[in-house]
Structures are given as C-alpha cells and as structure tokens.
Length: 159
Image: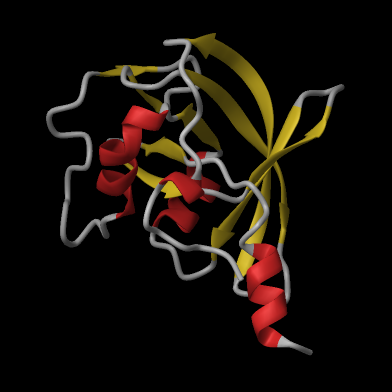
C-alpha cells in the first residue's frame, strides 16, 4: 500500500473537534476527540473512537455516561486544554464554568452545543482504538458559531 496516499486521503476526512467529559463517582475528567459520528436516527446514537491506551477510556466505560461538547472555531484553547495528559493538568476544568448534566457528566458552558449520552455498546477492535456507542439522552444548543475542525488547527490526528 502507498502509505503516503493513505495518510493524505485519511487526513482529508473532515474531523470536528469535541471535548468529551465524564464523571465516575467523585472523579471527573475529559478528553478531546475527533473521531465522532452519528450512526442511527432511532434511537439517536453516536459512535466515538477512543484510543485503548487513553487514561479516560476505562473511566468512560465505568461511568457509562458522557457529555460531548461541540466546540466553536474560537474554542481551540479549550480543545488544547483537554488534549493535555491528566498527569500534566490534573484538573482540566479549572477556570471553566461547569455544571452537572442530566447524566451526571460535567457540562462545560463554553460550547456551541452539547449532547449527553449513555454508553450502550462497545466495539473492541483489533486496532489501537475501540468504538463506543452512546444513546443521546439530552441535547442543548449554545452559541451559534461555526464548528472547530481539526484542519483549523496545527494538530494532525489521522492517517
């Protein structure tokens, strides 16, 4: 296979940037994801790929709930904050306006919208990411702004 062609083509897929938060008991955490897609109308389902090595992965599976924040183009700073490993930034929510969502997951005020979901299926793949499927149980609109895409940043996470 032509590795350069594969990498180039996969990087042409438009990837939005989302902050995904969860709460497991008294511990809350979050991460920035790009591999997210709607996969069903009825029931409303979204699928998200999470690296198996991600420290948030077991926490999301235990908690079984997430809040998925749609970031505006002006939200690159928030995206970068949640990219940082927890060991470098133990409280990623510090300085942010945060409320508790209907699922119990933390909801950040600085998003153009948020959907909350309950984990309904996990697809363990043979690759380095697994796919988590969430049923949407709540949706709220925030600011009406264009979505932040991976291509709007200097980051690369595809290919």
